[in-house]
Image 1 (cartoon, rainbow, N blue to C red):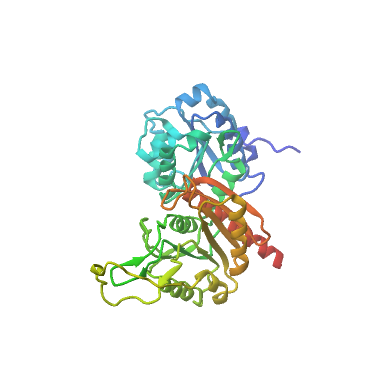
Image 2 (image 1 turned 60 degrees about the horizontal axis):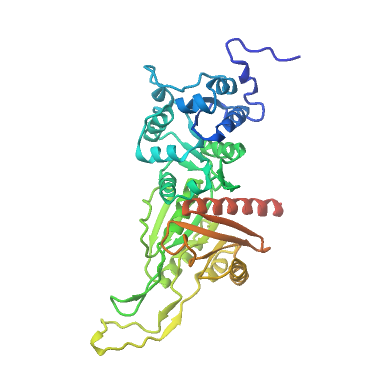
Length: 431
């Protein structure tokens, strides 16, 4: 017998909870912006509902009049659609403190991203987002636009700012056919479940990350170092925390500001490679197990055979330095903690993709890493100190995942998602 429609409930809500109850009792605001991918919001709304959510759509007047009629979203969600702000203060009713559980912007245009970062609220969508950013309702942003627009460095800077905002999750687009296409609805669903469960893919994991460069003293004021900014390592540490992990960051020298410590985040500052080695091994040998170690720091390869205790007088006109190789910290990780999932980094300069991958694989074998992240810092757009990176992630089977040039936070998230997937597969295999 077919279930009789409940009195007063929109027929479209019959599907609520039909595929799961992960989002049961959760009120989700779905903001639809002026992208040609706007029609995909229908599928996302229905998918969220099938997992228990109550979905409320918000659209700009331009989107509602040219791309997707509000009646379609009303049919999809079973709720009235906001496409114009009135005296009812719809943006407050949806996004003020405790009024909703989650805001999703799908698809999100470059224009909307820019307005979010600048605090501009001139449409129903941007007004809702402005309030939600203030009330600290979690926000998921899934952009869609042309590839060339997405590659615009000013837009990338805005994307990075969203990455840095606590409580905002960013789901990168799929680059194909000259487009930066919106993520699949299933990806957004998974992110929504994680956000609302307060339980990201790395929840319960302890993650150790190294970042920045180390220095080696020639005399008390002169050092040998390299040009690492620390941006990649800090991006990884931030993303790991957003994904639920307890993070310890061992940070050397760098231009990137270290994140503020909190209950889930601990920062250890070091200068020399020996200090970083001791800090890392000390963390790995603690009674509480370190699940993941990500060695993103650019540790100095050489140190003076002996350092002068006093400032060297430059009037001598010449200084001959004898250099010795420093200890490879990554080689000692598995010795200190065999069960820790190890991610090593391999930087090179001006080499082919094939050679870069081959060198990364050799490093993996030598240090016993589970993954190696390889990058060429001689390439345009991903040089040392830049805000972007292109990497090749190599595993023990020499399977390669290429992460194209993008913001370092985006690269960090893709790396950590791969780490999480790899650890889950290893766990199932052991069982």
